[in-house]
Each structure stands twice: as structure tokens, then as C-alpha cells.
Length: 88
Length: 88
Length: 144
Length: 144
Image 1 (cartoon, rainbow over the protein chains, first blue to last red):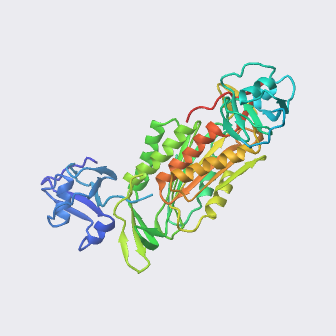
Image 2 (spheres, each protein chain N blue to C red):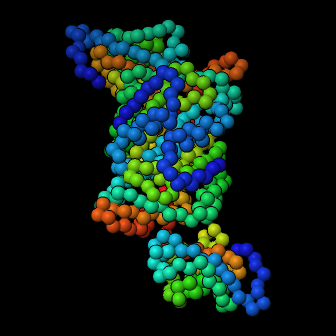
């Protein structure tokens, strides 16, 4: 994760992307979330989905690398959520 | 093996081929062997090589199929001897 | 090593030839390749077209990381991955992986590794359109 | 299935394309191929050319039997073996094996099987000419 300089009030802005069936399931497009209580990928999910639970099959990445939902995030990170990959 | 009709005196004529280093090692080209005391592939080798022992690494075929030196032969068979194969 | 993400139909044999032609002459004894092609059936249904979505930026990076890992695990000379995205028709090539090595075991092993790793990790998603006009996301890759 | 024994240089990608183009459209999801190429070094020596001897009649039969066995062991759509004989230069293609199947595991497994079986059983023999003008028979294929 990129190390950002925290704002004085610890607010973070996180870019968020959803792919494939998750993107289509979103009631409206969302590009970023912000708040001072965001610590982990799971927090980003909660903020972006109005506190819905993150389904077990959902995969995530931070700054273009696969990650776990318990990984922490830093101001300016790009977080993505997606279903199991089906390339090849 | 093709089933041939034995001659009255049990003489057999066997076509013989040698390949690669075995062919080059033959003092002279040989196309066939015959005799009434030929029963197996090993007998064909002995007849073709003036009773030299068949080296352990030598492979053989009868009528275009891999075989063992103990396999029997029939009049008219084509027998080949060759070193380990190195294609591909 | 190279990674190509392409938005229009590509000719896998032409890409493979370009790859092998660029190898140092006489060094590679073995080239293993895999071509994945869109089928016209899946799970019992007729599929008339497909959309391949991906995550630009992450895809390239992930495929390059997969090749890096192959180059560390096996003694190989070079490797290529080409992957299609966008709208695809049955019979179109989806993916090409090629690995050249001095000896065949490394080429075979690494080529298969590229495909298995790509199927597990690379951020691509397939959405099929069926003959009745409905569409559905492919939920899961089969294990190889 | 087809088996080709060729006495002059061949283009493996052209043969591969001819093979895949002849498949029923949309059925094959997976094509695995292997290209064996003459290297310019072997066992530490520079090799300038090679002669590939074979046993006409038996070779074709053995390669066809190997493909038959693959078609019985794996669920594959079609398979091809092309093998060069005669005088060969470094960089020339020696062998091409291609297998198409609905799914990748069968294509990968069968393609590798074709090569391993060919190396073990098909009656071909290589004689190398080295840079000092001497020549020698290759004694044994490596295990894959």
C-alpha cells in the first residue's frame, strides 16, 4: 500500500472499484469512499455498501495487488472488489 | 507375427534390418538370414552377427512392432535391431 | 517475457511464430504452448457470444508476476501470455501461453503453470450470452 | 488424427494452424502443442548439423499407435504429430505435437504423453555432426 500523509482529522479517501457481477449488483456507481473510521479493506466494503456484510466469495485487491479483507488501507489507496476470476 | 507355411524342412527366411549405430557397426550389409534352427529373435541376431552376443541395450522389432529377443519368429517375418531411440 | 491484452481477435499461431522467431537461434530445444478458444457450449447451454471484462492495470501486472514466478521456478528462455478482452465469438482465441526452454520438461511445466496461475489469479471475468438472449456471469473456473 | 513424416524443413505454426482450422468450430476449448527444435549445442559441444534416421513403415505405425492410445486415455478431439527426418540444421523444427480437447487438462496431459511416448518408442535416431567435423550418434533421450 502507498503510504499517504494522514489528514489532521485522520480522514481517508479511498478509490473503490467493483467488477463483473459485483459492479452490476451495486444500486449505483461508486468511485470512492471517505471517512475517519476506515482502517481495513472490510471497512471500505462496509462504507461502499451501506454496511452490508462482505460475502465469503468476494475477492479484493489494494493498489492492483490481491489482498485479504483484514488488510489495512491508507489514504489514497485504490481498493477493488470482485467475484472469483474466470479468465483463460 | 505373420503366420507362414513352414517349408518341409522347417527352413525359414527372415528379413533383417539394422539401424543407426548398429547398421554402421555391421562389417557388411545383410538383408536376410535363413536356416532351419531359427526360432527366436535372438536366433536371428546370432545368425546375422556370426554368433555374437546381443548387447543388452539393443532393441528389436518384428513386422514393425516392438518385441522381446525371446519372441519367436515365423518364415517371412521382418526383424529389425536398433539402439535406443532418440527422436523428438 | 511479454504480456499482451488485446481487444480484437488475434491469430495465436502468428503470435507464437513472432515469439519463437525472436528467440536466439539454436538455443531453445523446446516450445510448449496453449491456446484457449471460446466454445459454443457451456454447462449444457448454447453460448452465442461472450464479454470478457478485466481490471486494466492489475491484469498486466498480475500476468507479468505470473511469468516472473515461472522464470524463477523453471529454467526457461522466454515466455509469452496474450489474452483477449471485450466481445468474443465462439471459435475466437481467448488466451495464448507460450514457453521456450532448452529442455522439454521445463517448457511443459512452465506453460501449464502459466495457465493454471492465470485461471486462479488474473482479474478477468466472463459473461456469456446464451441462444435465448439471456446472459450470465461464469461463476468459477474449473480446476485444471 | 494425423501423422506426418517430412524430409524437408516445415513450419510448425502453419501445420498447427492447418490442424486447428480443420476442427469443428466452437467445440475445442483447449489446444496444447509442443515444438521440438534442433539446438546448436549438446552435451557441451557445438553441433553444426544432424541426420535423423528412421525406420520407414514402423515409424508411422508407431506414431499412429501412440495417438490411438492418447485418444483412448483422454477425452480429446484430435491430435497431430509431425516429425522431421533427414538432414537438419540448428533452429530447424524436429517435431510438432498438437492436441485439441474440450478442456485443458486433457489437452495438456495428452500432448505431453505424445512427446514422452514418441521419445521412448518411435524409431528415430539422431547423428550429430560437431564443429570439429566429427560425428556421433546420440545415445539416449533424456527423460522428460
